[in-house]
Length: 240
Image 1 (cartoon, rainbow, N blue to C red):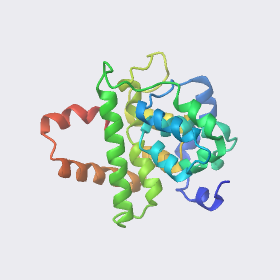
Image 2 (image 1 turned 180 degrees about the horizontal axis):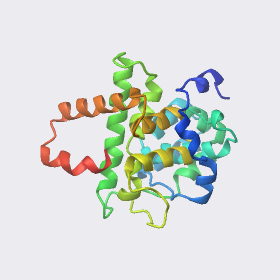
Image 3 (image 1 turned 135 degrees about the vertical axis):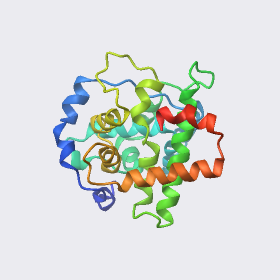
Image 4 (image 1 turned 90 degrees about the vertical axis):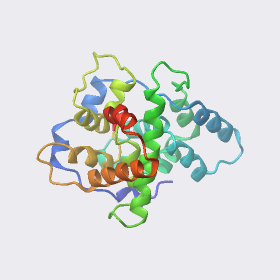
């Protein structure tokens, strides 16, 4: 059962979002399914077969895989008739959809370790690392943000690069501008308000910088801890 108090937490929508009818856009432009790490799929299958499933454990497994989290959240978003009803926690998505529906959603495409484009694996790893950094910053009260929302913003901060990294068909009507593409995707899939707010902050004339500052800080912290060589940093700029 959903915790309505949790679902009500979130940033107010910016009027810029209303310029795009997300349901009409999503219906017109069916976006491809996202790959999921094979180990995520295997562990989910094993958990679902158990007589009882720990929702918290399953949720953490899903949140460790950007593809799995997006597949489940986009399905949950499509089930809601009103934007204000969109789930803001992965736990609510899983309990609302049911285990079999979630397993089906993440089983549609698997991310192969030996894929031709190693950028896919790197992007998934980077997304998880930035998500963890964002949550840690929120927990330390460095930023005034809900840690769960901070994690989702970090996990999905680079979805605007999905068309390039996954080589989606060029006939899909998405802008070349990755920040605007991220906003379109987030709206079309009815992702949580915090994620949409983040991409809105990246647009010209935006009045906010709450989430964008958090992600920027997470990147700086991630680089400082990893001490990544400059040459490697330049290779990943395209989807950060």
